[in-house]
Length: 263
Image (tube, rainbow, N blue to C red; front, side):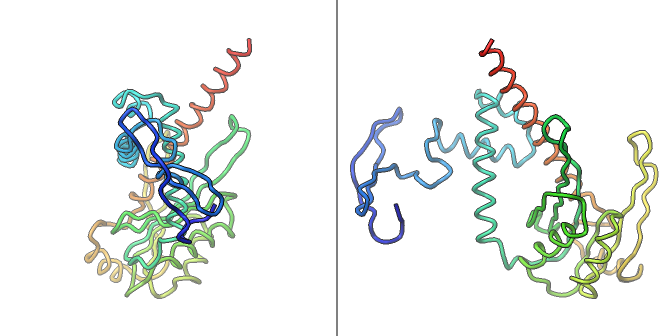
């Protein structure tokens, strides 16, 4: 079945709890389908407004459990809707996300465990701070190659007009790849935190590209940052980690329920 060839026409109606819905037909293969075919709302058992509200609450940082309680739906449904929305958003981003203004970038990476901590992965993320845009993600080993990929994917999608502010943690490959890929078009610093007993006891800021005067000028024009920091990307990673933890717990519950049914 193909779209955009003038081959889609009206067919009939089908009943739902909220009234009749239109069915369409492909004139080439005679396949019938609903108007939501090919969208994130396809075969949705709830209303579109419920789905949109759940995704909006997720974006705002609410946990899956709290959303399920408020909306009076199961946590499985919340997780499935999040997955559907994330897949569609990823496809949309790859196709349409380009040409955005880059003013301030933050990069970070975090470790996650899969399959009951049997498998280890790293998630590299980036953020354009002024717009809170999350332009790129790379999943794999904590390596030079993946560091290069996250930086390259981020800057290739956007446009740099003037000098930008870039901050990362102290992971060594960032220094070499940012110098190579962005260079004098940015001022770049690393924020290195010393943590003891789960508390930050020291923050060391190292200027890699640019001196203190240039950083002061850049921070003066920044709409978000008063000091050199990685706070925005770390907050984003906290949300990702929270969602990952919820998903792992959900899978464990599903496996347990399947096991109980079998016995």
